[in-house]
Image (cartoon, rainbow, N blue to C red; front, side, top):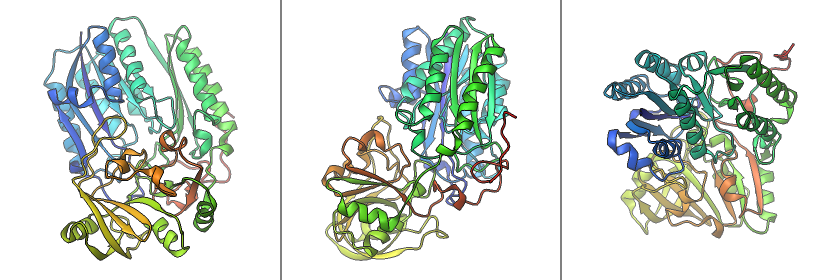
Length: 485
């Protein structure tokens, strides 16, 4: 058997005014896909390993992924989707299709790129099976559901099961190819947007819902189950939370299970909100902490689609006179030009921040010492390559700042380590992630502080200008009818 494998990933924050372009995507084509993903902790790697074990030939087509960001420019989105479809059409003799998707992408005019892609693929595939994996922050749409045979969501937050999700998806596709299963899927829609520590699957109550999903998958006749909580910053009409349960030819069981999990999520909706600390209080906590303090700047989380150019915490550290050593990252292509022109060892005055989201952030003039310059090439913890353009490390008093030309994930430690900065050596590290950073920082941090600062991905959802998602929606509205009444 031969199966197409492909990837298209970008998580969109529609409140981020900085658009995403074709050039922001890391694109591999054809035979280049296999070596790029082999031995990585990714869905494609997990799927390829399962296919190899079962003597199924993986036919690589196109893999395109970008750091989360603003809406994708229309002509660039069209180009990506067309290239992916054309690459699949160039392999007409295949038995099935596996796509690794994020599920929360949005274009300037297209609110559902993944649904459009899967619908176009269904026209090509005919009755041949299509399986797609999704981030659990995916915005589930009717088009996605009707076009794919099975959708396979992550089970962990922070996400540490990319590889395993690819394996689960590959096993489902193989069973479909062998005519071993007849999937029946139930979906329960929940008018709720969720944030906060209770979503951490190892410790929060969200984990109880996921454990029930895993029990369903492990039971006879249970195929796939998950809770898609959506990306709260992808403000499109389909944005909400969803429970998805797929069983083997037993729709009644799928509906019952989905309703039970959905009721649990709805009953606990008040717990799925983030508790944030004002910046002045956060700085005070860092001052009094012995050991490493980690600030979670979820509002400017490039992992969630924010612009990455916030200087709010930098200003706070300077304003409130933080006396320790600090490490943070800012996206600023204009500053990179100035710093590279000055060179290593130079001291200069640089306006920093506020170049991508100027309505929220204004540049702050800082006197910097240029410590090092870099080409921006490095690998994240999962083995995939970053594409952040040029990078520089500058020092302001006792604050080290990693400036990048383009957004990068400031989640794990390697983004700093690959530029000569060891997070353990600092009193304070600012990460741009709501909770994904915990995988790498919980074991080394004395204190973790979720900071309440402005940004296009703020966990303070009431601070964001929602216009397109369905209403009423918890917690945006005071009175939201129960979906179970």
